[in-house]
Length: 138
Image (cartoon, rainbow, N blue to C red):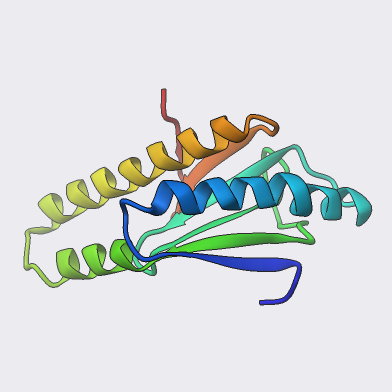
């Protein structure tokens, strides 16, 4: 990664909110100004949860994204998230039970993202799973 795309780390799920707070502040202070400076269109910050690798990525995007136009962004890597998903993948659960548990994990992470981004409070955001499905937390 370069200065346009930064990586933040969170070893544990319990520390994920703090990592996401730092990431949200970085988006506000560094990423959005770089997007504006690069004269690239954007309407929202798009967060994507890639649970199998333990990554939460974030970047400026159009609300109905066809292709990425971001010039900067970043990600939080959570080792415990990746390990939890890997253990689930190796558990031998039937597909339906496995998929239900993955949805629960992703929604739990989405709640933490929502809380951290709302605390930052200065940009609109959407959250998506790794398949591109929007997750709405109310």
